[in-house]
Structure formats: C-alpha cells, structure tokens
Length: 201
Image (cartoon, rainbow, N blue to C red; front, side):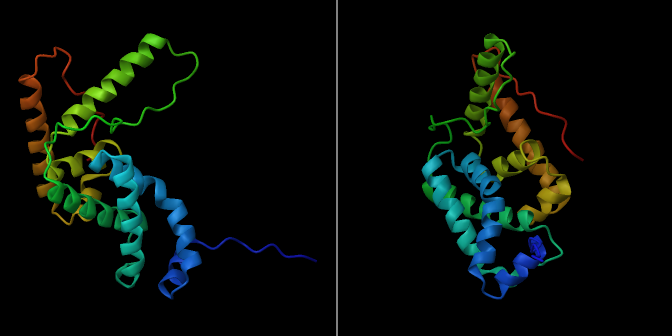
C-alpha cells in the first residue's frame, strides 16, 4: 500500500535550510517571493531594480539563516532584510523623489466586470496620484507607510521590522503624514487629498 508523504511545515523547511539544504530554502523563497518583491518595488519604483533587490534579499537571508530566530515570523524577518537593503539602495541612488514615472506603487487590483469604466478610471487615477506623493518621501518615512497601509502591519510589527521602538514608528508615521499634507497643500490639484484605510493600532 502506497503512503503519501506529507509536505514539510515551514519550520521543518527552515530547519533543513539552516543545515544547508538549498532545495528546502527554494521552497521558502517560492512562498515569500511575491511579498518581498512587492515591498522592493514600492520602495524602489523600478521593476528591474526590484527584481535585483529581491534576489539580493534572499541571498542575504540564506547567508544569515543561522541568525534567524524560529520564534519570529519568517516573513517579518525577511522583510526586515528587504527594507534595509532598499533603503541602502535609495540612499546611494540620491535621486529626486519626484522623478519616477513607472508603474504606480499601489497595485491595481482587477476589478469586477460589473464595475463602471468611469469608476475604474477614477480608481487608477487615484493610484497614480498616491504614487506621486509617495515617490517624494525619503525612505525612512516611506517604509512605515507602505508596511502600515499596504501590508496591514501593526505598529508593533513595523517596529520589529525596522528595529525601532513603537513611539519612534508612530513619530515617523506622523511626520510622513504631515509631510504629505504639506506637499498636497502646495499642489494646484484640488483632488490631492490622500484617503488611507484606518491604521492598525
């Protein structure tokens, strides 16, 4: 009688990877490649550079697996590596935050067929507008905003990822919102007010 092998749990895969099994780590990469890429893309604003940053993130994660604490969420740990790497890239790049004209940071979620075309156009225009303002924020402000509003992380989780205290995270978010409000008030566009979801506390 044939027995069907049960798939390994994430913890078991990580244990094997820590012992030097690249195939086990490859399965982990497949599970988390998309969220890591999304973070890199929102931070860097360039698809090709985001791909490079994603690959570099997982190389660094594999190299430092011995430091990984199994009691911590692996995704949080790998996003910490990704966000630090992207911040380093942005600081080295030293470009104007308003110079990007690639795809928007806000993903355009496929709309139901029943949605009115005008509503779809309005939503996409809104996404482009939000991208414009995010592109002008320095990385230390952009990172907590992306983690809060697009990943739904709590202040505590953001603090863990960014290696900050919760008050420091709240302070950066406050300053980021204030910076956005100042930039918007100086804009000639009458529709330049951001509407974010209610943050997780």
